[in-house]
Length: 168
Image (cartoon, rainbow, N blue to C red):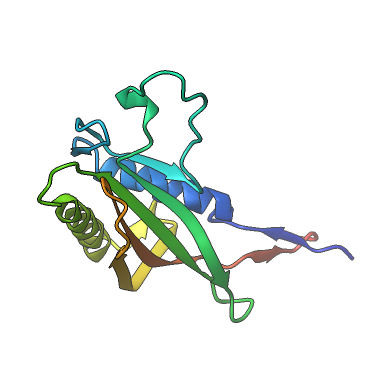
């Protein structure tokens, strides 16, 4: 007999989109520098930043991917059928700052603090996914001036897949 499986909380792809939507809301109204030196709203992408097509013209603010957070699912595991999937979600963060004082790292630290504050106060996303500590973060030691890069790793529990009884 064939078993039917149901995920009440959604797919892993929906998790990635839910984290991105949550971060868009958290950072709504907050502005950071792009490589043109303009303060623009933070963008949140899933999996990767969009690839810019054509380099013929000088880019406009809307053509640049930064400042941004890229949400991607890094890995996951499930210890048994009753427990949920533990998913490692990576948040890659990019800002720009052409200032000689290299203050772009302050913007990154503020972004990281904002995310820690959000998930430290509310431990769920869409009431479907549970966030757990520890929150890991790092700033890139690489000099990519005028781009500054940081990252966070958060742990999210996705409820277990349940087996539907086809005779019920």
